[in-house]
Image (cartoon, rainbow, N blue to C red; front, side, top):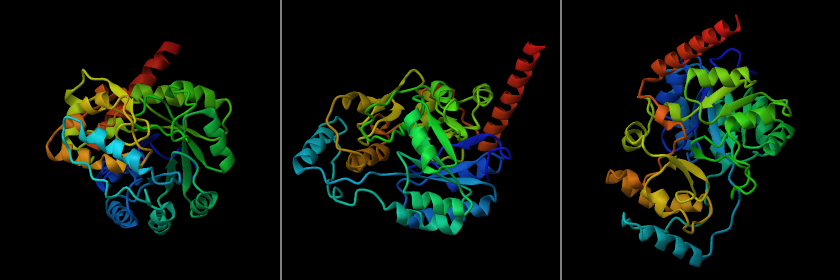
Length: 353
């Protein structure tokens, strides 16, 4: 697989935390699009199990995605104490455990990738930066098509020079974690998906996959006509029957449409876009530990919120256009998107006659 020409030009975005189930990934791939696993926090055993399961459901192209974490020292005890006190002072009154705040703070990428070399998914992608070059080269030697997220021209140029096969151009509209190489997001130009595509297509020689705020067939045709090789949709799939999205998360997407989205560091220590709730408001100017230590620390609170059915303290990752999400089976959603694409193309054709 060296391009997207033999596929429906849609990649289902890799979303970690249990959303990208084997059922979701397979259902997407079986339509001719590309289903993706978000394996950022998954153990090698879980990755192996999911890849075994998905191959019972599809023999089509799939993507496996990983975070590129930055090595870090343990935060000082005094900083951990401050962060814990802030979370425990919130109205949810969750007990915050610091028992896991010791190195290693994330799983070894080398270890996570062991089942990848065995199962050989057609696509391998990375978020937050460049994977070690030997990993990229090994993937390519096994026939995998490798992509890396960029939020700017500088990042895209680094990806191209690193030897990747394509760039995932993530606009500011995208839900979940912002894919900047810099953990603190300094220097982020916060370009829209459309602005980013226009900047990249004149300078970047790699195929560009656009991500962020793409929800309809018209959106897809617009990006493809502007030079994108494909598009990546995440929020669109959150309410599909096959997704592992928490029911409360789905409810906020479908029923709380008077709300807006906000970028917050409160849940993880890294900028990520969520539907605004009580947590994001209360944590707006509060101290947080670096990513992913803050994410580990806030896990007690988030689990308590899920257990008690409280959406005001859950990470409700979603893009800016979440109000356009549809609660449909995957096959029906992609069928509707394709129909909208065809309809929009016909309208555009009529205008040029």
